[in-house]
Image 1 (cartoon, each protein chain N blue to C red):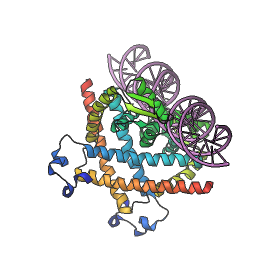
Image 2 (image 1 turned 180 degrees about the vertical axis):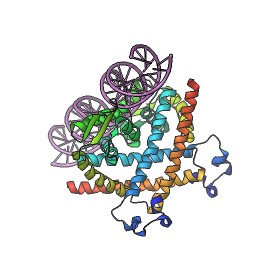
Image 3 (image 1 turned 135 degrees about the vertical axis):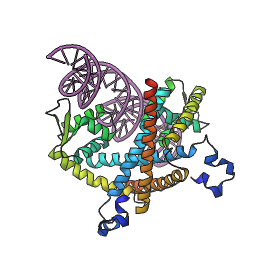
Image 4 (image 1 turned 90 degrees about the vertical axis):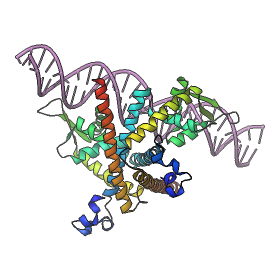
Length: 178
Length: 178
DNA sequence: CTAATTTATTTTAGGCCTAAAATAATTTTC
DNA sequence: GAAAATTATTTTAGGCCTAAAATAAATTAG
């Protein structure tokens, strides 16, 4: 980070490794990542609304169903999208009303609801997905291929770090409860 | 990206630069970034709720006000947080009710509402901000200092790319309207 | 000076989202 | 095999968020 490039430091004592209580760099990193995500998400929401009269949650849900030929349960979708079950129920209600999704209880376990795209849903999704891929490419056009690769790799490490930290805290809480 | 490391390619013809219509790498990059942001955001929301009985939008709004000694207008806050004016109005209503924020019309321009943290608000924010910084550090603990710097730099380029692409499209739409 | 326009904020209508409680079906345990 | 526990989903209550319309104050044009 710019403030910790050794050659530019006014005082070597302020290096991060020598400031155990300081985590400003991580905070700045998070705020910048959040800015990027928000910019992309807002832009994609706007374009989906203007060009297809739909919303991002609907698009995301259809994207999950499109990847599965045999259909997915409410629980599977909610896990993949990292949203609550109740939210999937509600978004699906809209898609059902528009005839884009089909929902039926599984024959062997009637608690489970299996969701699939209808033919109309698959067609609508295909058109949107093609445009969507182009929009994302436009948005990242300022990065060359090696930069995209490097960013992808660093975010992979970030993901690993996040899962570890989140699991560690959940473990602690579970022990605390016991 | 792993699928385009030259040495591992099964067929050199599938390199990105030779597949003009393909933008799968950008799409994967975006999905991974979204996953990271969502994981962090959800975890911070949970911790704010459990430890401080508050929400992320309230914390974010207080963070903006804390940075300004003279107060900020509704419009300034909404721009900084990248949310609508109406949303700021609503979140501020809650903070006003809890005595954490003060709102008063500017004396010279009575359209403008100036928001400031109350003494109680400043104190509450200080306690939360300290914990928050620690949480973020925990979440990024799997990255070393050079990696954090590199990720920060690449996200800076991403931000520039996004602003350019979004502005370009807004320009196009404005010309189309004229 | 007054009407039209612009600017800042609030209100409205509606969708997204969550946590927690409720419901319904299945599996486990005795 | 019936009661208890578990699992999958839906419902409920409430906050966040937006776009668009409404309100209110200031500025500009004539």
